[in-house]
Every structure is written in structure tokens, then in C-alpha cells.
Length: 248
Image (tube, rainbow, N blue to C red):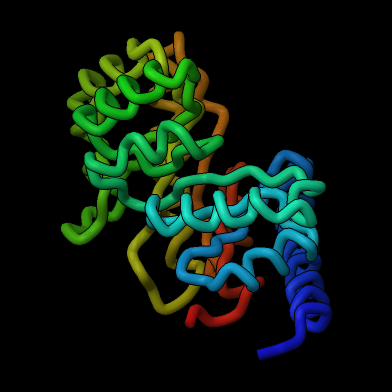
């Protein structure tokens, strides 16, 4: 494994390269690059790599597994050298109901809220700790059975989603900020474009029908397709291996 200085240098170079690519994609469609946030995905990475990412400049870290993430959060908080950095932790993976309390207590944004039942449980725990948790609603725009999220591949059935969306919007300890998706795996990034466009259309549909809620965020795009996601309106891109290298 690289020494810590070399690891920080390598990650910083990749991190800045991704930021440059985001800027190019944003400029291509007339967007302000500063309107797009880069979430560095640290799932399954050892604590040394996470610390190096923070020292390399990462401001927002995304984790898929609540227990693993909280272990990292607490370990890094105990290291005074890391406390000088302002780091925001996002939960981006599927969350089981029994992990709802961890999400409510430890994360700045929950990207992958995928059911009314989970929303009600997270809302209760957020209320118990006296906070309002910003959330994104996860939609399955590709129709894959293996994917989490409300099924939204058939646009004619979008009105069926409104009951759950309105129920979540009424919860007092959650604040909907927008939508999230993970398109089907494909042979190339261009194939993801149609799914990103569908999520954006779903956002526009919800803006009109649930106007009391903010729908400003679109979390979409990973290492393989983030430039396309930016072109199609992503405000949050979730990048792991393109910055941190292969997962162990």
C-alpha cells in the first residue's frame, strides 16, 4: 500500500481530475459547475483511505452501509487531525429498517429513502434526537427487480406514486430535497442518459403536483457515467473508484 503522503497525492490528483470533468460537462450544457456537488463514495474502503480522501480535499463522503459508516465516522471524529476538515457524510445505499436510527443520527443527507415505511421510521428517530433530516426519494427508473426504490419505469403510472410522496412530505422530521436513482448497468455511459432524463422528468412531474416540497436535488451518476449525469441535470454525483481506486 502507498505511504499516506503518496496516497493523499494520488487521490487528490484523481479528485481534481473528476472536478475538471464535471466542469467540462456543466459548461457543455450551460450549467454552473458550482451547482454540482461531488460525493466521494468510501464504502468498504479502509479508514486510512477515507482519511487520505479527506486530506486530499473531499468535502462530502458517501457510504452504503450504515454500521460500517458509523464506525468510520466515530473513528475519524476521535482523530483531532481530521476534525480541522469540514466533512459531510451522506447515506447513499439501501437501508434496512433496523438501521434507521443510525441514519437519523449520523448523516447530513439520506439519498436512498425508498419506502413510506422506512420514512416513517427514520422520521420517528429523527424526532427523538431533535433534528430534521434532509432526504432524497429513490426511484427505480429502469424497472430492474434487483434495484431498490419506488418503481417509476412506466411514466403512465407516476400518479400512483403521489400517495406515498405526499405522506412523506407531511412528516415533520424529514425534509424532501429531491430524487435519486441508479440506472441499469450498461455497456457505456451514453446508455444511462435516457434514465437520467426520465428521473428529471419525474422531478418536473412532482414539482407540479407536490409544490409544497423542494425538488432541487438530483442524485445520479457514478464513476462510469457522471459526465452524462451532469449534462442531464445532476446536482449530486456519487464517485468512488474513479477517485479512490478499486475497492478492497
